[in-house]
Image 1 (cartoon, one colour):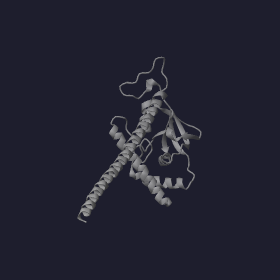
Image 2 (cartoon, one colour):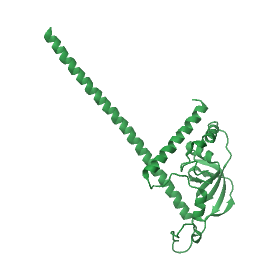
Image 3 (cartoon, one colour):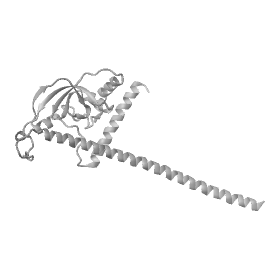
Image 4 (tube, one colour):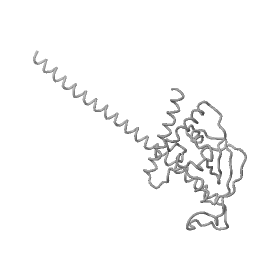
Length: 232
């Protein structure tokens, strides 16, 4: 397979995975959306402020949970959700196969969660190929106090004993997202196993039908041979 064919196959496979995840999310109804979280939504929710530039660092891929401006282009697993990202995605994928060096991605950090400012396609390709760590330039935002929270209707009450930071809320959101991803993966594995079992059963059924048909033909041949012997 040529490199061009490999890149085309990678993108087609990534799109199929995204489609399966989207279908699984619709079937579950109410177990959470497969939409990639947006930084602005998270920022308002935890009243994030500031924006201190940190030293360049290595970030775990699975800790990158959202995007600043490309939320509709990728799903929660950073698989391509739109065909329109194909040209750029395939160009990055080709560079990956050539082992070319990439510049660090640019990320916003809130709590333990990272959102992509620049490098969404690179993160998508990294995640597709199972790359665990990536170089990143990180800007950290500080979560606000409970009294500064952005939930409508004041539905979230602060715990007793003071006003802690809202990192706990953000950490819970990350935990919930990862739990949903694990549930989706388990559901996909279950469906794949059911499909394999169904194929095996169909194959077994076809084998049984063939054996029965052969026995029926053999019985007819025996009757014909007996008839011929009587005639002789």
